[in-house]
Length: 214
Image: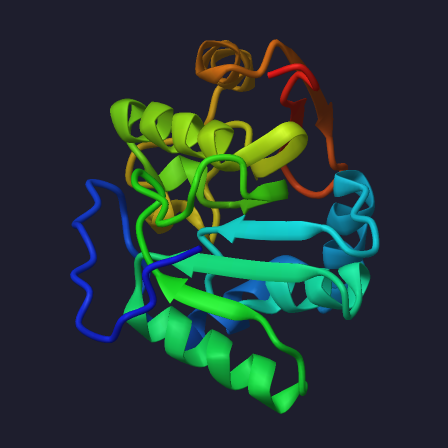
């Protein structure tokens, strides 16, 4: 399914790459006001994960959401997480080992996913798309569409506007305009997109599905 060889070269991304894995987890905890677990579970509810599904987390960071997804899909399910930062992947693998869960974490970029067409039932993307410029973002969405099965689902969560707080310095390319994201998803091959507020700070979600006859 994926090229997991130790010598495999990972292409460069044009987006912002976060490498400080410990700081990433700390910021996530602060951002969620200590309610990170409840936040993750809400995202998985929105994604409507089912037992036995194959799931990909694009821009998985230190792997916390992917590990939670693994619990949801059960023993018959398969979960992959990819991130452009080797440091994030190292920490994610340690977390999975500590939790005694099999999650496949790979160092890869969102613009070129190392998976065959139609591999996954669900793709997750959380607080990652705003790190990509427009061209890379469109490439990422097209890649997500490519690796989803007919009827497969995407859940993308991100910041909906610029802020002036603790997390501003991560926004290399600015906030996401979700009406623009909807158009990009349509262009990538998702004809129906649902957009809504998460009710947490300025976070919104976009939920999209591949046509069953695709």
